[in-house]
Amino acid sequence: MAQVKGFNPKEPRYDQTTFRGRFRHFLDVADPRCLAPSLFFGMSLEQSATIMAQYSANSLPKGTTADTLWLAKKVSDSAIHPDTDEIILQPFRMSGFALYGTPIVVGMLLPNPTIASTIFWQSLNQTHNACVNYSNRNASQATATSDLVTGYLGAVASSVGIAVGLNQAVKRAAISDRLRTLLSRFVPYPAVATASTANMLLMRRSELKNGIAVKDADGTVHGFSQKAAERAIFQTMLSRVVLPAPLLLIPPMAMMAIERTSVLKRFPRTRLPIEAFFCVSAFVFGLPFAIALFPQTGSLDADEAEDRFKNLKDANGQPIEKFFFNKGL
Image 1 (tube, rainbow, N blue to C red):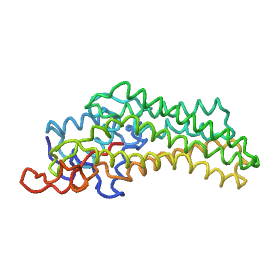
Image 2: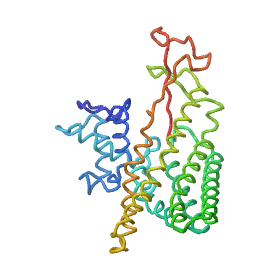
Image 3: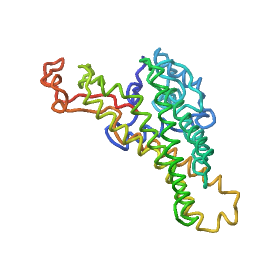
Image 4: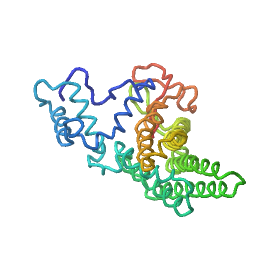
């Protein structure tokens, strides 16, 4: 493997111990420009894969810079599954989340939704989320089909049930039509946030029973901890609650502000493009913000872990004071 100063493919480019570093990292992961890298970066997916292969084979062209390697890694990682080496379909890539998710969000935010339209958009949203989660799953370990089906059905049922219930409550409430329309725009958020959390809990419920792998600072696995699983799932749950907020709260609030001006009265056909712009912006920046709230690698003090993890020593014979685990997404 070649050595290029400033490039290490085994580590993220930005410091993951700070929110700023994690945010910049996930901005790269969710960058929609990766869907057309030749157009935006002058580097195709095939070229990026070739450069990374040359790096691994220690056959890089002379003068290849760290910036070129980071770009190649960004483009290839955005489309190629790290475990299977298969190309992920564009609608289900993290980089495609904004482009392909925006029409769905716009649909969920349409005013005065009917029961049929609510069921359609909420079901479509959860189907898209399920496909994204599956396409970007950890494929090093097989996931039971029953867990996938249970998680999907649980997410659809909770999102549709909450959205339909809240919409009907808003319609029956003794309030003005203006307030009714306003409230209906914010119904998708609690529905999607609850569904996302339910999906995660159903998919990862076995971790609470069996625990997740915990490692020392050297990367040596010392067993499976339920306490670590509880912390990982709690942090992931908070991220899942925050994630839909920018996507489903910022666009309607922005549109409310614009509706108070004369812009939409003078140019009524600009409503959908303007709302789509706010949705895309919320996707591009809101998704990295939510995922970056907590480090991907979590930690647990030995004193907080189960008794079997206390008084353990590392390979150098030193007491292990802190264990580390993969939080998940």
